[in-house]
Image (cartoon, rainbow, N blue to C red; front, side, top):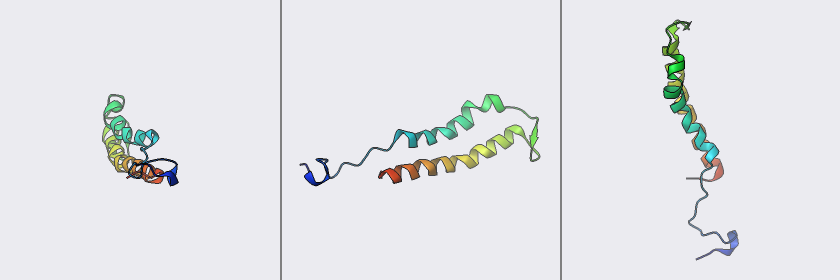
Length: 80
């Protein structure tokens, strides 16, 4: 059954999440796996840590941030 007050869309249909919001979910994959061969070094040291350990720390801290950004974008668009 159609509801004519909202342009003919069914009442139970939610808008699809934007694909742009889902790109944030690829960030952890890229940081942990795709870039790993490029950063697999002991030198230089950053903040007293070997570069690889520093890279993994940054990737670990960026993961919840990227999930939050994807969720925020979906909520702004009206997703679940």
